Image 1 (cartoon, rainbow, N blue to C red):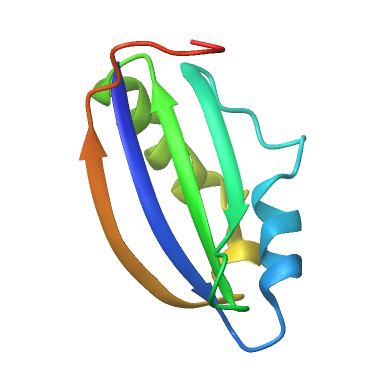
Image 2 (cartoon, rainbow, N blue to C red; image 1 turned 90 degrees about the vertical axis):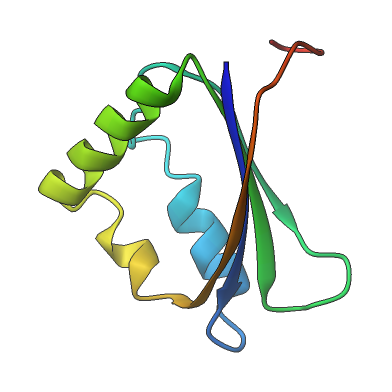
Length: 96
């Protein structure tokens, strides 16, 4: 499995709009086992996105697809800062 944890900071006051866009059920994520969007407990404009994919190749293919189709373009306009991404290798857990 392949995992990512990324901090995204929305433009002031737009965090919930960003979360709504990221959680759009119309955006398909083939090969994704888990996609969790969470509020930062301290920063009112920040979100944490935790993803678990079958492997890196499935994530890479999905990333290329969303860039080609612009499915998440509305979300991109709401992001003020793309924070650092931590890459992980999930080994299991509830729901995986």
